[in-house]
Image (cartoon, rainbow, N blue to C red):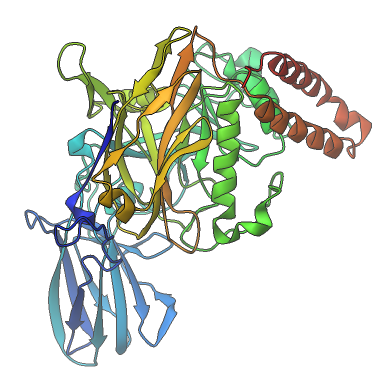
Length: 538
């Protein structure tokens, strides 16, 4: 029998024992204490490994009013904190302060305190310890939906160690104090795509210079996509733009009433598993624009995150191969860029036909190709580098009837928050679940996934973070027997019921407005009826 092996980074091992423990939110549990004897404190920050200056996010709060964040003059605000561009002079009112320095999920968080008094000056340098260097291991980060902002996106990306951003609209950033136009932040690579359009819960992606405006379809050139009036239904734009090979379309709002209609179109290329319902500036406990999940009341602060995951698993069980995406979202302008992020990699064979390894993408085009293939992991905390059967996520394993596929997994994991559990999910059911200490006591060995039918597998890690759902999940690996996907009656019924609820809602519209929806509702009914006839036996 094969075994699945999972190697945990030393960042979460305690005293070389077999017991696992997550690093404290303050990074190794230590606290920097900065005491300025005067009214100005100059703070600089560097990477602990080579002492090179780095850009990071800094959150400052009054120690006597911890719920009140403090702004800093001549810095770039990021909603929760400001960008510390290698160094900054803190000219603040006298008193005690607390601070945190956060540079994305790959570094430990450094916390400390300082006090300012009236007359003197002080300087202090802070070193940020890196837990893992994802891009050096082949995994490159990106935020698939960044709201437009007047504040420097390259600086905000560098402060979060983020390498790609897809922006809703054109960025018109204000000048940054202390920087010239020819003095960009060091963040290699740094790719920004401003050709992303949002409409009614859908995102439309195109290569650079592909999305242009035109007064109507007839006036559009071959390389342009017409921009219609605001009253255009999202599904109308989905059908029109989805006919273009160069355009990719993602469901940014997984709770939208129209989701069953969008899926039925066959033109959806991605699904946001982590988005603007998971943010740092405030808790989101309800759905404001879409269908309210039935189990929302019993899930607490994590309910929306788990609901989005449930919808995605039903999507997979209904026979779709749609990769997960992650991003800030269109409604989370106060959340730092890249909080919800997607890591992608491309496969490279180690030895001939042997197992693959994750390799760094070389361009923005390669990044998106990997994202649409599902060679990815979504996260807003834990850092996974997984393989299953020697393949990256997104791979399709082929088999013939009567065969049993025994699939081994390799998993590297770095975490900063305490972890609730590690799970292997096979066809929507928990194949293996363990807390990290239990997994360690088992010697890092997991039972193999033995696949006898079509389906899918994913690996996830869920933390004990209390404010919202903080987790990481691999994109699925797919298993096909005789080329047939897994289609389960329960999942099809999940979306048919959703469609019925949407139809009931549409019936409240005036007849003339309702008429625009009728062709798409009929087409969706027919699609889901056909899908119900294709269900695979248990």
